[in-house]
Amino acid sequence: MDTLEFRASKDLTLGTEIELQLLDPHTGDLTPKVDEFLDQINKSDYQGEVKPEVTHSMLEIASNIHSNTDSLNKELRKLNRFLTREAKKMNIQISGGGTHPFQAWKDRTISTDYEKIYKKYDFLIKKFTVFGQHIHIGCSDPDKAVYLIHAFSRYIPHLIALSASSPFYDGVETAFQSTRLHLVDAFPLSGHFPLVKNWEEFCEYLNKLQKLNVVEQVRNFYWDIRLRPEFGTLEIRICDSPLTLKQAVSLTAYCQTLAFYFLEENPVAVDNELYLAYAHNRFQASRYGYKGKISVPELVSPVTIDQDILNTLEKLAPYAKFLGNEVYFRHLKKEVSRLNNGARKIKKAFKNLKNNMNDLASFQSQLWMHKKNC
Image (cartoon, helix red, strand yellow):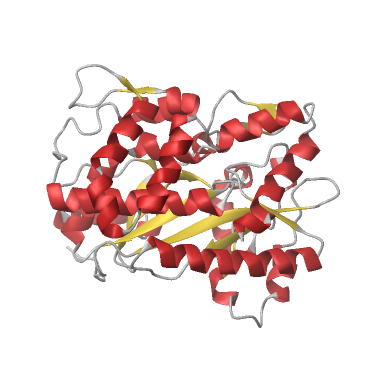
């Protein structure tokens, strides 16, 4: 059996990638100008942190590695100030949010780096003009990384509800708080991590699929959480791109604190019942957000996601204090207590804007490009 190398990193180091929308300021529609934008910043200090994505109307910002959330926050704000300034020069708007509210997927053009994937998945890739935040947590050994992925599975509904910002798709209010999530589900290698108990079992699993010509490498999996052996991290991929950096950084702080709690307390049993209610809980979060009801082994009856998050924030308070994440926890507690997330803000704005889709797209970009977000 071929053994994959896991390049160990320091426990609890963190980083994030955020996929963003490029908009035409006159129409609010997506604009295919990522190549022009990248050419514009080609000689800047930030060229390595800004990358193209699946289609020409998408942009990804990728942080460096950080040991604490405050330093991540400073880097992202400095980067966003630069991007906002450059976008204004080119008459482009940048926006967060998990989906664009009315873009026509059939009009999208594929970036050069993704042409091979496009040949395989065709229209699924065009429909995949959706936008997510990926959070990386460092691990010093691969067995630990496998355990952390399983432990996080219990809290996936939290991350969905906290980040949900895609209530519209193709000009339709979908009734889902995270519509983006169900566009990911169309891919055959999506879903949850396999029930393997350690790194050796994972390598065996991967080898079997490679021999069957199902996958070539770990990156071919679109799981909600996957390993990134080349970085020595686990990558949490479930989140919609938030509307603001404050929410994006707070989500990263929450994940780092959860990981610290998992490593210290080892609270999650990896057994055959671990993923029993996973799909149900995931649906509840994407459909109803904070008011979804989830079923977890340690609770006698289902609990609403908002209450489960608030209970978890309280339980994790000592760990957040140790890591310096208290300010981000206070923000999350306020948001959850008010049942406030991106999806709710978008739907409220749509109503206030008298159901004008173009103005709604501009509203989302104004949140991202506002001076408070830089």
